[in-house]
Amino acid sequence: MPEPLPARLVVLVSGSGTNLQALLDACTDPSYGASVVAVGADRDDIEGLARADAAGVPTFVKRVKDFTTREHWDRAMAETVANFDPDLLVLAGFMKLVGEEFHSRFEGRIVNTHPALSPSFPGMHGPAEALEHGVKISGCTLFVVDDGVDTGPIVAQRAVPVEDDDTTATLHDRIKVVEREMLVDAVGRMAREGFAITGRKVRFGQ
Ligand SMILES: Nc1nc2c(c(=O)[nH]1)N[C@@H](CN(C=O)c1ccc(C(=O)N[C@@H](CCC(=O)O)C(=O)O)cc1)CN2
Ligand SMILES: NCC(=O)N[C@@H]1O[C@H](COP(=O)([O-])[O-])[C@@H](O)[C@H]1O
Image (cartoon, rainbow, N blue to C red; front, top):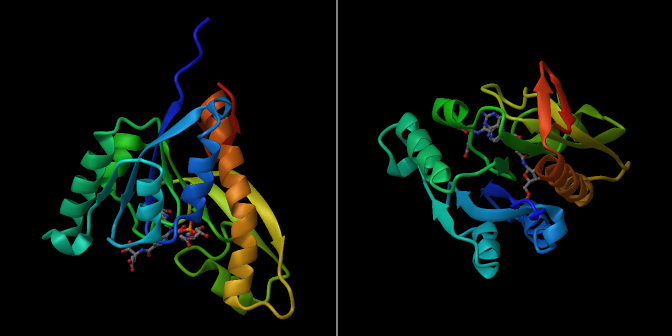
């Protein structure tokens, strides 16, 4: 029986790319069951693109300001992603909301990692808002992306304690250590076992 082909991952980033790096590292093991076939970004000159280059992974950049409308950007980004024929699109620190072109092409096959325990603290400033609110437990969430903002069905979560002397940076750094483990574990299971979405429930396996 031939080994199944690795699941094709396209990863979108906007910054340092440490979550991307964790996936790139995991994919070097054939038993992980996935391969990063392309990395895309909404901006140039970020470490995430350099990480992809170092791993020999094709990259592409689509900046919103280079398009006449947001919809044109969304279409160009989605078409470029589609050219790599992904089984799963992973948003790993990607700081743009994807629109209708993505949902129509990849519905149910886009996951996003967020540095808070959804549904709390959606958006771009999860750790800061959690700290401001005074939570004692924060964490990270992997969810299937829908047309809302961090509202999609949850794939996995991990909890992280908040320390009394935490700053936004120290809390986010602590979350990111656990987030990378969550992302690698969950994406690997999705790739090897498949997954099913029933309403708001996501379960691994066929
Ligand atoms: N359709 C969706 N797209 C994305 C989601 C999502 O839940 N639905 N999650 C984001 C990641 N993210 C939080 O986890 C997030 C990122 C960015 C924003 C946001 O408000 N972006 C604005 C401003 C961007 C900028 O200043 O550069 C925007 O897109 O215009 C909210 C949540 C990934 N995509
Ligand atoms: N709402 C989106 C958001 O806040 N995403 C967060 O950006 C960081 C990117 O780190 P990385 O570039 O080192 O992987 C991650 O913690 C990710 O959850």
